[in-house]
Amino acid sequence: MARILLVEDNEINRDMLSRRLVRSGHAVSIAIDGQQAIDKALAEAPEVVLMDLSLPVIDGWEATRRLRANPVTAGLRIIALTSHAMSGDREKALAAGCDDYDTKPLDLPRLLGKIEAQLAR
Image 1 (cartoon, rainbow, N blue to C red):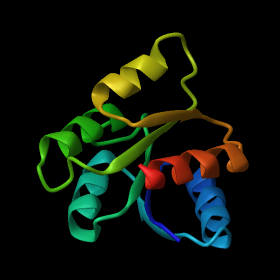
Image 2: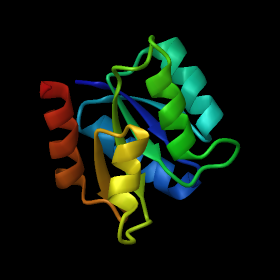
Image 3: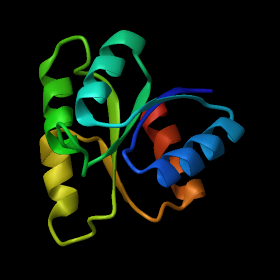
Image 4: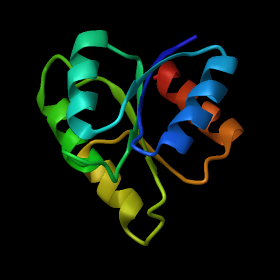
């Protein structure tokens, strides 16, 4: 079981994915914007952050950069989740500091494999 911070502003996506992660045995905390993601990551020390990139207040790219810049959160495992599947978006997410990248709609077995791979690092 991992402590996962799910950062997702879309209520339907957030509800569906959080329920599926809990059923898979994970403890899930939720943030709905980039600033909440930073605050919760500092307060809760999750093992993995699932970071939507298109977020209000602070977008996922900037939230990731800020998490990487803070010594307390610099080592978090961050997986970008996005419906942006344009050429170069994966590279942009990795350059911002994400450890991995997955596109929506999410394939749960694939995402769980990515989470397990990050936990094994």
